[in-house]
Image (cartoon, rainbow, N blue to C red; front, side, top):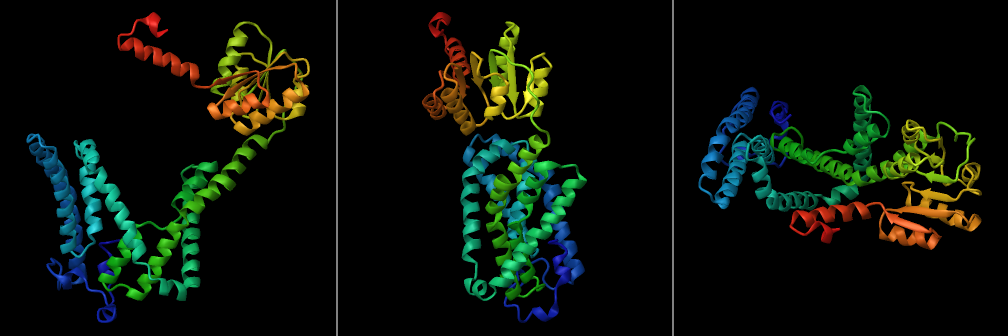
Length: 398
């Protein structure tokens, strides 16, 4: 797009756009060239940067590394970025494109990890400066005067891009909630739009007045990005989770046992295997069909259904059960489940899995007889191995 923009130049805008191109401002390799020659020079400069950077950056950085000075290494990387940005300027391209190309060159270097660590402070600082300049460049008078046009175009950009992305998601097999995440995550205009607009004005393709409106459109669409993710988290994702598990009704529970396990994720499965190995009858309830099918493979009687539903607990024999293991992956539901069981079936011993200390306190207040953090014992065991590795006697570590 950057190479083709000069071919779209409108002679009528050269006098009235109010924008001064780099060719007019100072040194330029494309001053006075026709559009086709301008485009060739631009393509040649970009190709020279990519090819030259690939073959010349490696010996350059190897030579610098031999100096043993980290400061020289960082200075060389910054010099490369600034030099390529300056080259793009003299061919009437944006320095931002030069910085981008320099990033491509550096990312393909064998020293990319060291470069990334050294440039990290500059990246955060300059990225913040970029968005500050974007915000400072917003003309609020234009926004107030043309707010309806800006809002309409901003929503149109998001809608059109979303339709295209949704079609691509379907074409490449990105289904269910992942397709919507892909669509909503990329539906806004990108920050490179500001670069394209500035370059279009410099090349006399559009007027500065139109560029100001379009800059507001790009900024508005980017501003709405968090809102799109909120829509995904609160509207799209819950609907897919419900539809995935609500397509079928709960199983008919035709068996009861002294132990009921609610939730057979990676935590609950270990408990089930231990009980099964000791021939203790158990009944498993879970709202995830895949987990139920996994447990059935080791001959454990398992039923699909929401374990927090009182009617399903009663059908599973909670009234006669001796033990209830609560290992569902929902903090609030697990607490409510414990409260219900201890209120109506106080004789049942309740063991509950806690996500963290705060959740553990909630479960104990709800009446759980025994609460265990999901990472407590594994962390203790690994800590014991760490002590042993550092020379502490194994018995002392134990």
